Length: 282
Picture 1 (cartoon, one colour):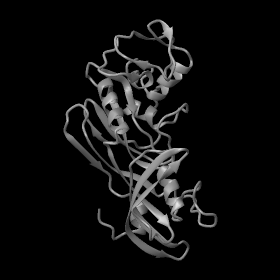
Picture 2: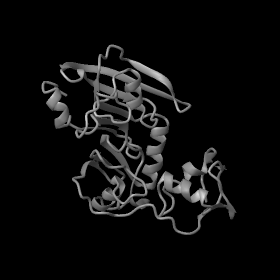
Picture 3: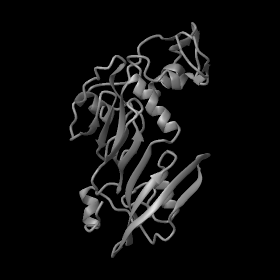
Picture 4: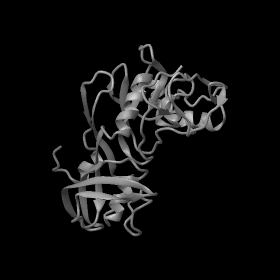
């Protein structure tokens, strides 16, 4: 039975309450397949709960596997409620493929011993396939809800580093629409160097306020300074192949949803960044 102080969308409330289908994507898929019922009636993604409803999941929709990693996966931070993982480039966070970060993390990170432990850790946000850096995984149902609330209210501060191509003179706040939704990023120029091939390369700190798909990559391309190695949004003739995308999620700063303590986790700048900006000190 649900216990709510105010109405809440079913697809938000149901995240983490079922053993085999704990992710937001899995819940939405189960609802669309007609597997989730409210008070013995089929539910829909737009349904709102008011409290005291009975929610049932019929059938099994398993959206997690445990697969031994074929690359190094680093656990940067871990406690009984959540973990923060350093995602390598060239892998998706989650999805229908076997080779995902979620499946690898499920293999290397044991279930929490908390009473509301999820059967496997569940990612609460994503990074693009070519982007490296920090990803948060929930380990308990309560942490899953708390982290989702922090993201939806924009209380998790994210810092990215990128190397971009071109003359970056305009920096500050970018505020526009992407696919009909508001998209806001802050850009901070750290350093620039001349490049025989690219003219100028810029080391930037990027702070996404919203979290739209490919937001930072699109925003930098709109400034006419695309991210180095971006094969999708880069300029023809200035595409760097074989080195990957020069974009990393370097820092996360938030209040722990369970303990209430401040959490700040950072990664060192990767070697390929240092090769272009060797004098940069974090």
